[in-house]
Image (cartoon, rainbow, N blue to C red; front, side, top):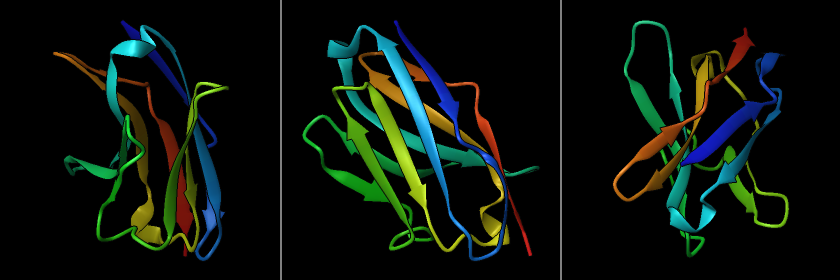
Length: 115
């Protein structure tokens, strides 16, 4: 199993920045990839950014150039730096760890961007 706990959400004005952090623990050698996902009210959960075990990253088109995913293997944290935030970025943000065959989710952290 893998345990995940997000932190760093909050309320920010449009144009501002936030940094989310996901602390992970458990069977870390089983993790193939990790990522951040978000779910706005009434919408499906969408991928924001992912990173595989080789450090290859992938971003949703809507956040490319504004968000940066990073991983610190010494601290066992996965971060998401979010800049130039817009109201449409408002959502609950979830951390996910992909293992074979399971995917593990954190409890989520709310990000609210006011206009």
